[in-house]
Image 1 (spheres, helix red, strand yellow):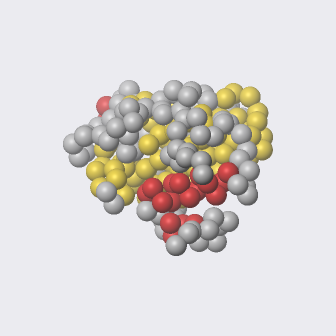
Image 2 (spheres, one colour; image 1 turned 90 degrees about the vertical axis):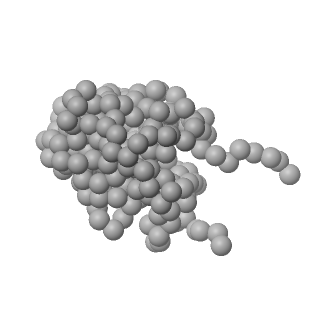
Length: 199
């Protein structure tokens, strides 16, 4: 018998370069006590890279939405609202990104000056992801596509995880998806995936 800490931390998996958690907006590891509809100038990154999301324009700031995911809060994006993260890695390499959200539009978008990728949220599916064996993680934006400024996200984002490597589809991806699905109450989105829900 070996006791272990099964919670996700910034040290749990190598390559976690962005971790935004709506249940811990200030990244201090404690539940938030924010009023509903409070505008947010920053969403603090809980990964080791400490590359937080910011919005300097008051009218473009998303808001805090208590109870958006059952007992847990979300970050609400309305028309014209977004967060800017910046560059997580300018060189080519593996990337794997996960977003838990309710709504429609670009949850996370990137653009390196010549190519882009995004995690697009669609109605009816709260757990979405993007993976590539060779791409940059440049000019990261939450809420729209930084290349075109289109794809405005309308809805609530619960959590964002971005890794600067390609995760193993048989072991690591099911761990991440299982953690997100159970935490945010979106287990139905695992149907058809490789993750098996234990009864």
